[in-house]
Structure formats: structure tokens, C-alpha cells
Image 1 (cartoon, rainbow, N blue to C red):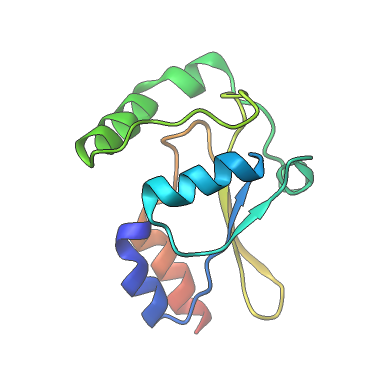
Image 2 (cartoon, rainbow, N blue to C red):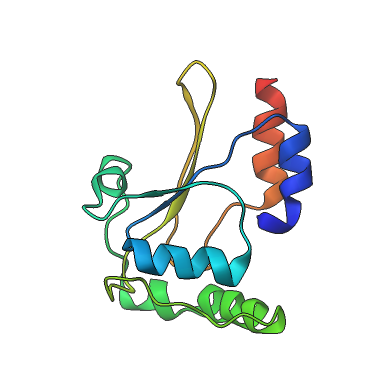
Amino acid sequence: MYQHRKEFDESGVDIIAVSFENIESATEYLRDTSVEWPIVLDEQKALYRYFGMGEAGFWDIWGYRTWLAYFKEILRGRRPRKGGDGNINQRGGDVLIDPAGVISLHHIGRGPGDRPEIQALLQVINHQN
């Protein structure tokens, strides 16, 4: 997603990442990735629960998409990271909320490599504008 930040900036979208990690792990993530958008720490996982992002099963975590995502990270010179609380089973996801507060996309990832395609996100955003 970060590689497409110019497209998101041009669409007027504000991106906020939510992490269940502690401040030290989140700071390390920002340093390692050079990501510039804000990160909200949700160590109690209230937002994860609210959006239905519970724990994933073994094959969700260790399936093909995960290995592909890890391989891409390694090719970019980054090492795959484990969550700060050690819970590698925590699902992630993507939520698009329009300026009126309406959820226009709610994707719960099956595992670390399961994210909507960038073009699909941009299409939803462009339909909002």
C-alpha cells in the first residue's frame, strides 16, 4: 500500500494504520519501513474486536498468500515481522470510512497476505469522490 501512497494522496484519502503492538514495536516498524502515515496503537484490540478481526487459523496464517507476502517483503529488503505481543494469529484487515462516517469497505484478512488489491481500494475511493 505504501508504494501507492501518491495515488492515495491524489485521491484526498487520509490513511491511518492501527496496530495492536506496543509503542516500542510500532516505533521499530516506522523506522524499518519509512511509513509516514499515523499509527494508532490499540493494544487492547478494541478496534480489532469491533471490526470482527479475531484470530486466524493455522492454514490462514501459513498458507500460500502468507508465504508470497513474506517473499515480497524479503525481495524489498525487509524481514517479516512478528506482532509485538507475539500473537501471529491476529487477523488484520482494511476498513474504508468516508467523510460522513459510513463504512464503504470492510475487509477482514484471512492471514498476513490477504489484503484487497490496491486498484479495488482506489475504485471504492474514487466512487466516493
